[in-house]
Length: 178
Image (cartoon, rainbow, N blue to C red; front, top):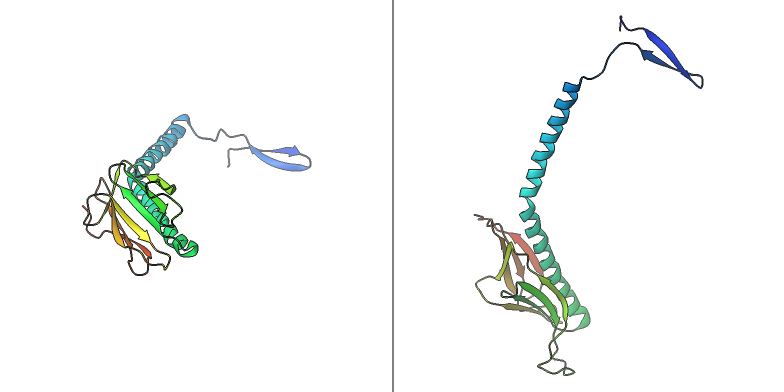
């Protein structure tokens, strides 16, 4: 600051000191900083993109467990049986109200309360079963029970456990992943 001459710049009775020196950043310094910022964003982008399948798996597990919880609570409050059905061939799951109240024909198709597709990168199966399956939720709060295994292509697995006596839904992450 010894070589710099200080001048005063005045705006509305405020004085701002201005230096006459040629201080600032060079073009090379600015390019290097922008290059470092670009590399940092690239590394963060790759990290976020590679974790995308886990987010998809996590979201789907929450979606299925929320549907099961919805089925249990509505079965109790509406005093009707709700059925959660997972179709392996259609790669979808649905929630239906039991039509055994006598008002409907047995062959008439039930309207779905919830119907959703299974994402292509995921697989959902009833543990120890390879075909379609169904879990019923009864008005007393109990269910037919079962364990749904949901896994992605990398081997990450979640288990959704439906208690047969209480009908409560619990989600557990697999301890032995590939």
